[in-house]
Amino acid sequence: MHPLAMLSPTLILNTLNKRQSEMTKLDIHQIPVMRDNYVYLLHEADADLTAALDPAVHEPVLEALKQKGWTLTHILNTHHHNDHVGGNLALKEATGCTIVGAKIDNYRIPGIDIEVSDGEIFALGGAIANVMEVPGHTKGHIVYWFDASDALFCGDTMFAMGCGRLSEGTAEELWASLTKLMALPDETRIYCAHEYTQANGAFALSVEPGNEALVNRMKEVNAKRAKGISTVPSLLGEERSTNPFLRPNSSEIQQTIGLSTQDNLSIFTEIRKRKDDFNAVNRQYFK
Ligand code: ZN
Ligand code: FE
Image 1 (cartoon, rainbow, N blue to C red):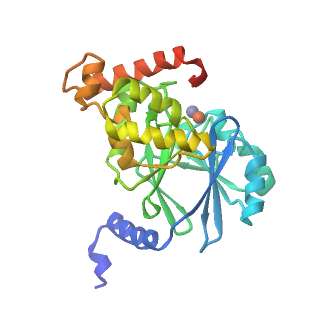
Image 2: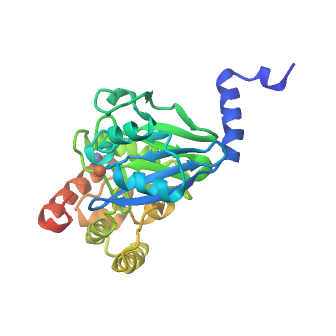
């Protein structure tokens, strides 16, 4: 009997995918667009496939494709907001690409062809994405985790030193979603959709000024931004030590907000609320 015959079908699939994903790493290209959005090109060289992740607009994407000599075959969307799907239809018309998005959001992802759900995989050739549903910023938000590339495309769910605002979901949902993402390895690169790092860091410092890792990170971030350099992606390990939304256990944060409790959700909820107030006061950072 073939050794694989003894395994369950899911296990066989996982084994095969694992082998495949160990071979294929993505070539990732970041395109800054509009005020602070990042679109990504994901290139799988063996199969010559290229996906655009959350194309807010189409022209800069077509330009980057031309520069790279890549042909667009797919669009991957994390959620339905216009600064993530705005380029979908024009890119589809120009290239005939296939659009992938959340099944539960199929009615509001323009041009969707392939509908994916929590726990499913999407294969860009040999590059395998694990799809996770992460409600909170929106009800239908999903992320794509390419584990062999140590790459997480998390849209507006987690940012460098921040997290998405609650435009549709609840704090409870977003906390559960962030908890899911925190289970990934420290070396996971966080490819979020916006350059909000400096504003997020200013808030982080306001609730945890004594965090040395945070103070040092902000120095680096400020130096990079002064030169117009991107601060994305970061590493999940860095986020764990500096992102206030992932740190309800910090006694300094608990002290600042006057909540000393073991209940992570109430601390997270209070921090999320304070960030909204902070944004309202610091209008230039409003998002
Ligand atoms: Zn959004
Ligand atoms: Fe966005």
